[in-house]
Image (cartoon, rainbow, N blue to C red; front, side):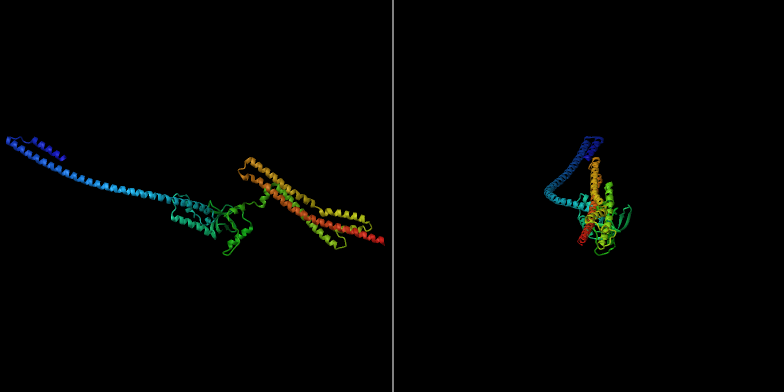
Length: 448
């Protein structure tokens, strides 16, 4: 169109600027010539338009063909989409079902990982093999499903813990001593139950992954067992096992010693102990005296010559009064026995008194301890049991101390009383025998 417009302008300007005809014939020729040119131009333009039309028709046919192909492809895609939508719905339902099962599995794995993590953290094996529970931290906190390799690693870790629980292993470990110093030395691990080093029992500190040496150790017998086990390379050896993996050891070392128990008793406890010591001294002194006196009396029974002992002194009274009557001799012998009884029974009444006072003092300590407990409750409430422990300790310890003192003193008193009564019984029997002997002598004299 642009080229046709330019061509028309050229024709117009050519006509305008053409030389004017000089005659009619020239004019006619010029007209014919111009008409022929216009006709040629029109033919060219017509041909051009036809070519353009054919080209547009070809483009239209191609577009219609493309449209038909696109419609067929669209229909095929629509059918495929419908088919895929049905498949997707079915797969989504199957996915939800499978995800439900996997979700349960994920929950179980997280629970197992959390439980195993707490076991591994507090296990003595972790002191030997640190940082072995990283997979447990990942599995217990991650939201994604675990992989097969992670599940296998979890299983291997659980198996390793079970296997190590049956081993006695020696290794180099870091130990925090009772003085607070950190050292590295040989440690013997007995399964997951105990850890020892140089005869001392150790506790695992999960927060730091180190072993600590408690400030107090079990009795010497258990420490000797630990040393023997450390020296051994094979065989069966006696050793105490802590099934709580250190909790029982912690309670054992926290148990108060005898000195701490005495301190808990307070002033009343000291008084009870003093009474007990005095009673024991009295009992020992009386026991020695009565045993020695009893031996002297037994020897005097075999001898007719009076000696320095209660029975000998009774015999002297008999020998010094050969001419008195039986009633007079009986009175003199009773007087002699009464003189001997204080020496034989000396201290027994004091021993009985101390045995009676000890439980009363224990009761007094119990009452004062309860009063102190109630005062603590009044001031601080019942939120912290440690506030009340002092008064309760005094209340219980003094009662125990009073009974521990009273029971032996009562036994001593009973035993010593029986021995003193036995000696007095011998003196009574011999005095009666002397009176009877004098009566027999007097009767014979009267008959003569």
